[in-house]
Figure (cartoon, rainbow, N blue to C red):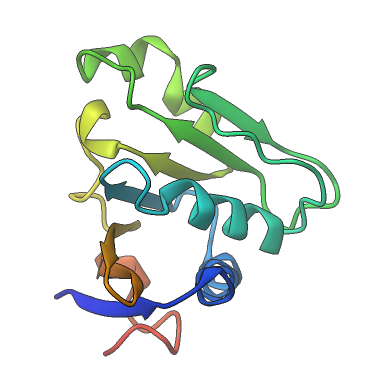
Length: 153
């Protein structure tokens, strides 16, 4: 089951990020797909800010992984950008599973890491640019169903 949410401006993206952060649990994956400039990093930043991070959230394009684990956060989070991976096995070489233990994962370009959509704890979101701003095409895994009011039953 998938559904589409219009995101006409950055405030709407921030609201979606807040809604996701509110429902986010340790072990969850938010998999963000879409073309360059579609808003993946903007949504990731909104989620991390809503979890309580008050500082800068750099794009992890070059570092691949950014870890946010401070007492100010409601939940530790790993922000990953897999764009530069040439093969999914490289995600394993990063020790991704170790970083994910007890944390949520926000994964940009998840298909470069082999994807996460098969995981019941995965919230897959494809970001698209539209004439009216952006669209978020959301496909919740089984563990997300019934967890948040903005996800249709």
